[in-house]
Length: 387
Ligand code: SOE
Figure: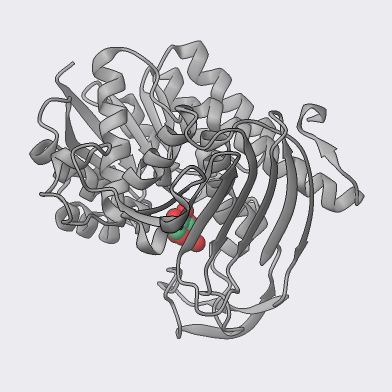
């Protein structure tokens, strides 16, 4: 298949990131299948019409059911709020469409398992949007670990820190409502850290966590104030925040490594600190998304007079995806992680294989999210195998 005709549901933050990826991809990755931006879907006709024209989609619909019935659509891209994922993904799979779904895959582990089962039964390709795996510096960390260059892994220390909720007057957006988002910082940010831990170190075996909701009530948003940067436009009425503001947990990996995880949207000064440190018997790596082109690398065997963390800029032809972009040292950004993940989706369809990360990884992540919630509720260690 040389072309993949895409129908996308959602057109806000992630909708823009995905549209941008589809548009740029053929220019820099001409060898893979070409995404065709056929159809975009949103509930509000004026808004979706405007989005179609601004983001470059051929046409739009206001009902996703219409989209999944069309013969000229191969792939359904779901980036609407999390409570919509399950119904759309299952119906689209049953209509024979390939699936791309944003994280967290679903509101619950049971729902995510149903989504995986539907995709497998239909025999379609399925991918989940863990975009940070696609930063070349993260792929370099994975390569060093897989090649044994860090030795036996002892520690994974991961955190995703943001601060956009620190203002108690920030409106009660959908990401603060459990019935729409599933959870708060835990599922929104922690999901990325859990996925990176799975990717880099391996499966988790058991977890124990704690969480808090610091601001328990917020003003209801007025129309059009749902984005991460919304400030004003709130009504006088207030509603309860039903998700966690911060969740922390400790974990044991199946391979014996120890892990600590932190996700919060209340870390003043941290706009998007998605970072990890991994320590092994032969060395360490450190990554911080705010400096996403860099990997800090330390090797125990370096001569003692030059020992120390070295800054590796992952922009050389030796680094994943880098050759498609600019000459060494010419850095890339957040949007490129989405382009790279769409390259994987296109390659997988063209090569007739499952993309990675797929719904299996989404389910695995959801199991950890739920095990942590259960450990908090029951104040004990919970094994992932219990779920
Ligand atoms: C908001 O906290 C958010 O946009 C997340 O939803 C994304 O998954 C993360 O990549 C950046 O922050």
